[in-house]
Image 1 (cartoon, rainbow, N blue to C red):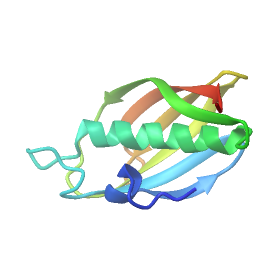
Image 2: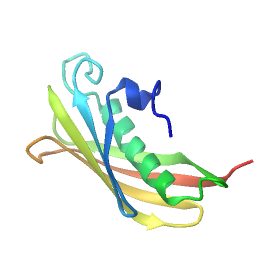
Image 3: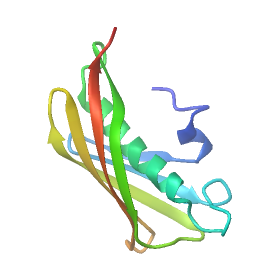
Length: 127
């Protein structure tokens, strides 16, 4: 899957681990991901969370016959971050035929919780 020239590429996200139960990615906290007050934008955290759920789901589906899209996402932003790197750790909570539900925790370099999110992915048949 080519991630160049996508939101993933633009925000500097890097996939660092991918398995049948987990997906992990990092994202820099810098001018690309800041909100106007100089801290990590909540929307950037949500984009990172949905990216993890999407890539994790894509890893588990029949790529020849299925696609996956975000169906629902929520997020609680529990701590601000001005710079450095955040890491999103996604674990699959439910692996169904038509949906998957992911739990995503975004932490800083010291493992402090920055954001917690749950994302439901829809699995659709290719047309």
